[in-house]
Image (cartoon, rainbow, N blue to C red; front, side):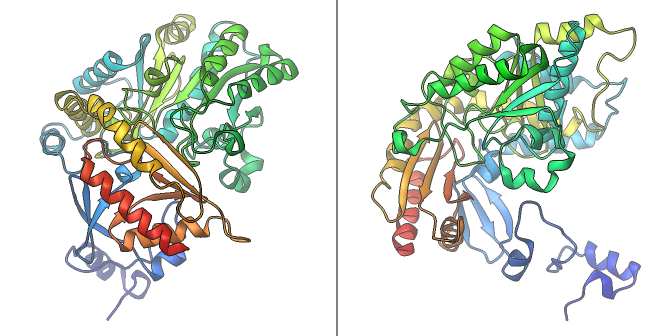
Length: 457
């Protein structure tokens, strides 16, 4: 007999919920970014993970083509990370983050600064990419105020950009479906650059598209209209991941950097997805040779094992805020779980694993094979563009008439049925396998996707 929590008294409900041997009711959990009603009619539950695979509740092995959610870069269930979390939980489970500290957060900050692009050597810990973005926006405001320019309160994001789900991140983000329900509550002083997706000129490009660097010049027009003295920062993803893996045109990021320098704007890179080897380099800033003033990270920081994010700041940005503040708290911002001991233990173990197994170099060696594999899908039914860089890829499909997104979602469901986890956004299938993927894993992904796409015809 199936029970729901609402049909039981409180004591019985708690006892039922604590019974790990039973199948859970799906009613109580309001799921994020999920079609809840459809999911609960036909749930897809994962119960174990190891290496490159999940195990579904029905016992099937599911090849992970998405590193979980862009985050499990070193593969699942890695013993050094598991062991570090277990040992830290037994030693120090929690320490207050305000006016107190513990050694691991300082060690992790030092380790992050050591692998970050030159100059980004001050680290503020958060619990997610969303929190990191809102923190970076606050830092930009604090920096300009500290330098005597309090009028710099505007931000510039980009169409189709994703910067998490905080109100600040949604405001600078450019995915309209995320913005529309909250538009009256968002930070008002925001403009958006045009996105860089130009399939008419760049479809099926290898590497960075050749056309579109001039799209960065829209920032000059915004500066002319708003006044440089009103703009605090520009925020972009080096590769726009959640909207469908949109690659920066050759020269585009360099132009943004130059315009920001010319007008005294801070440049923020959201590297929540692109960090920690995803682009076959430590960070997107390394891959493209463009260093921002602030950089947000999360996901691969702990291999997804414990939630954690961070903002890496240029030293002079940090010092300006410190030096201008009155005695006491210099930056009135933080989270109860900033630099949580378990997250720090996971982060340190993850960074060691990346180094010990040379996973960033491994990704660079695998990237050409990966690119060829993704582009081998050209010519299959409904495929209108293919994009790949580092260890990320996208298969863009033509939408069905009157049903945008439906074709890709059907592909997602069929891939899962055939033992492959992919991610879809709109009518784009996104792939981002763990950096430990072998050629055989890549071949399986492409074979499954090819069969699914032929079946959709």
